[in-house]
Length: 329
Ligand code: ASP
Image (cartoon, rainbow, N blue to C red; front, side, top):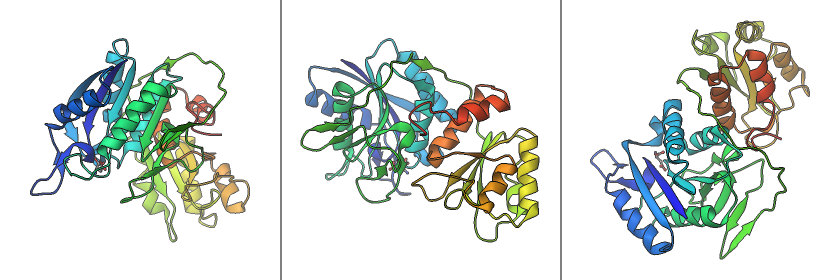
């Protein structure tokens, strides 16, 4: 197999500096030596990005750059591994899952909590696990971390220090790597590969946080002219204050001018069912649509993706509710 490894930055390849860890350029050569000795029968190319970043600097334009890079190499390689910082890995992985729907080749995003330059690290086990996954596992877009192969649009970073830093709260892992792999068998209908890389732009999507005492003034500045989508970060089963007419009319006005507002719960696990409480149904009446059991990260990336496709608002709303990449039940 020919495997393309895109090194975008992140802790995995970082080296110490006066200001703390920063991405290191020598990493690509080092990891290539390890890859060749781990799987000598397969071919690896490691490409170091010009602008190596701590993924907390990543933007939707970076998702686009990664996707375009993979698309340019699509015919030349059998499998793809993206080395990425953990902080925003779930966002980038979800964005890739929407851009490479029903991919006929495996794409695995991974990184590490401890840089490879440290003697004890999780970099090699995550990279080798990702290699095993692309060589032996299913096609599609996944995030591999701490022994778990997760659907890319279902994964979240849930731990700052544990080496098992990612979980998939609403969807079982596709594979778990212990001594051997344990695969989750899924009977999937054959669907045509759909690669779409629309020009996603920073600033098109915002977040509306719900917190005790939230006022319309807090949200007004977040709903600027350029905003076309928003993730309402609600309580519990999808609730927000329904006693503040100002808040609801702000949502209504934004929705009337074509902003697609989706409701995602701060709980992280479980689903939004906004009709359950009056405080949730008020949101529906104000034009907010349910994000059901999607992760916050996937909802954010999906809004960016659908908006950038240039679909009419009604179609964005319809498509948002459908599963495109195992992202929602
Ligand atoms: N701040 C780092 C990043 O996201 C953290 C990591 O890679 O683990 O790039």
